[in-house]
Image (cartoon, rainbow, N blue to C red; front, side):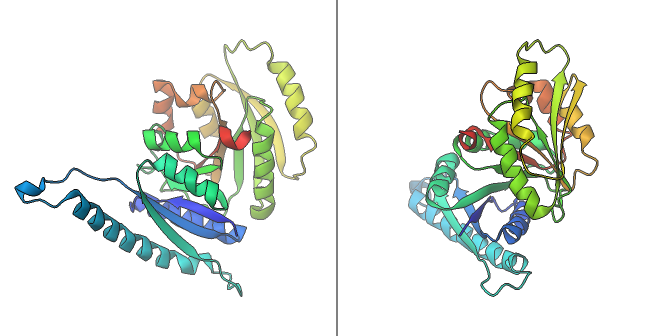
Length: 287
């Protein structure tokens, strides 16, 4: 059976993301797999009266296991609201070490549909996206990653805005969105932001080839638009009429249209205004 992998650090934002992941799992007929990566903290040396590293790790594992169990039990009623004869379940695991390596290992050994995590500071998505752990996860996993701000309520998803630079690989991400759209009944708006000053002479050819793929994709609520502007993020934000129940999606790969979105400091400032959930398709998913 499929699993929704929810990463948690037991913060309020992570708990909100776990509830969102549970809602998704219910509609996708999937289990929820909660995961917490232990991060060891410096301890007082044993000769100074402090615990040993072994004792500290054991204490953290016991404490985290208790919190994972409590969170799992609280989510089960929401997962099985439909009263299915064979209810899905909420499982949990924890590990010690590099987060990206552990998540990649889980994805390779479990039937993971999607990774869900919460933004670290409510609507301050820039903090989460530019965090080394988050970037590392996105760079190494092969499943879509959903980043959920605290103010988002995805009980009813109205629209997904997919930003594209007409790359061939985007068609795979859009096909995935179409399958989700059939389940959640949301509209899909494929948007290309024509950045003023962009001198890509191959853009028209890429657009023509891209549209050839899109026109054959089956989805009754799919539109393709092109808009102009200097700031990519501001233009995307303006398209979100209700960021609480709309998602911005894009592909993440090196030397891409969105390498400009994630890297410059001016864009990080723009992301502070970002309140909609982000669905990121890692490069490993697009291969």
